[in-house]
Every structure is written in structure tokens, then in C-alpha cells.
Length: 193
Image (tube, rainbow, N blue to C red; front, side, top):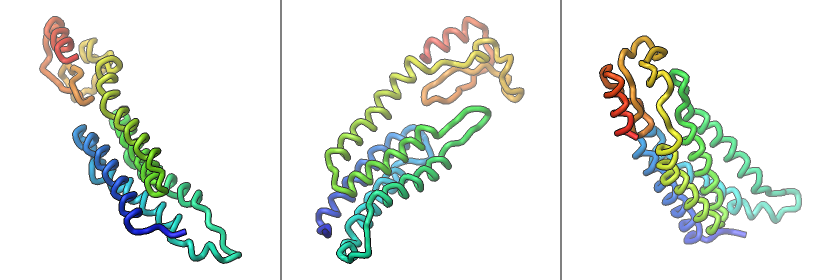
């Protein structure tokens, strides 16, 4: 059971394209793992799956050899988990990179599906993953992200190096502005929501 070159090329290009589409979103969000990283993870997963599932078909004809594509998949998942774990960073008690790690893990799954020729699963997972990254980000930022309590309480518990009142700004970043009156702070918070 071998795979012909046009089919292999189609599977690899599909994984590469979906990985690049995810990576564009992450690059626009200023994440370190962007278009190239996501494209390479999906492409590499598809390549490894295809090569290890179809490349050793000549050995499968021998009675003493047993091929198990599930082992390939499990090793890809473990390796990508290690890569994703390195994307998570804690700075000042704030975790960053969790979405990036989850996206890298999803890219591996999409690459595996593409490498096995599961086109419907590849497209559906890609579409749902992009839905999670793009529209759900706007919903989350609009309705679920709020400024921490220390900001509205005059920065009394803010780190000593910050002597400013901070307000929530787009892209999940803190934009610090000079200390202002409560009325000014309230109007800034409402205009940035």
C-alpha cells in the first residue's frame, strides 16, 4: 500500500495551507509562534504520518513485521506537547502562550489527519479551529476580559515599579497611562471596552 506523489503533495499542501492560515492569526496577535511555526508543525506532522504510514509498506509483507500507525501518531502528539509546553511562559503571575500551545497541538492533529488522507476531518478541524481563534477572541475580549481589581482601586497592589493607573486595552496588553482622577479613569475604561 504505497502513496502516489500527487496524493502526497496534495496532503502536504493542505496541511501547510491550514497551518499558515492559523499562523497568520497568531502573527497578527503578536505571538512568537506565527505563520511559519504553525505551517511547519502541520506540514511536518502530515509528512511524518504519511511517510511512516505508507513508506514502509514493503516491510509489512514480511510475516515478522507489524506496522502500527498509531505509534507514529502518539509520538507526534508527545513531541508537539513538549514544543507546546515551551510556548507557555509565566511572567509576573500571568500565564502567556496557552492558546499558542493549544494551537500548535491542534496543528499537529490537522497535519496527522491530512497525512492520513482524512480530508473531511482536516477541513472541519481547520474551520472550527479558526472559528475558535478569530470570532471567539472578540467575544472573549468583549464580554469576559476585565481589568483587575488593583487597577480600579488606584493601583494600590500594583508592582512597585508601576506608579501609574493601568487600563485594559486591546490585544490583552496593559496600556499604562499617567495617574488620573477617578472620573478620567472611568471614562478611559469605558471608551476602551
